[in-house]
Image 1 (cartoon, rainbow, N blue to C red):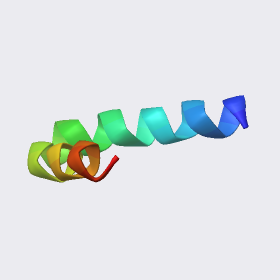
Image 2: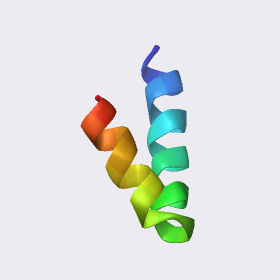
Image 3: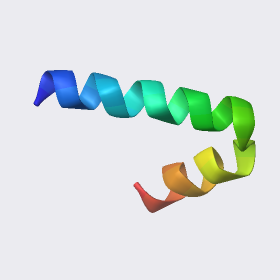
Amino acid sequence: MQDRFGDTHEMAVECTVFNPNLSKKDNESE
C-alpha cells in the first residue's frame, strides 16, 4: 500500500504542474 500511495503522490504532483485546479479539487475531495 505504501508503494501505491507514493505512486498516487507522484501523479498528484504531475497533475499540479499541468492542472493546478485539478490537484486543488482532489485535495478538497480527500
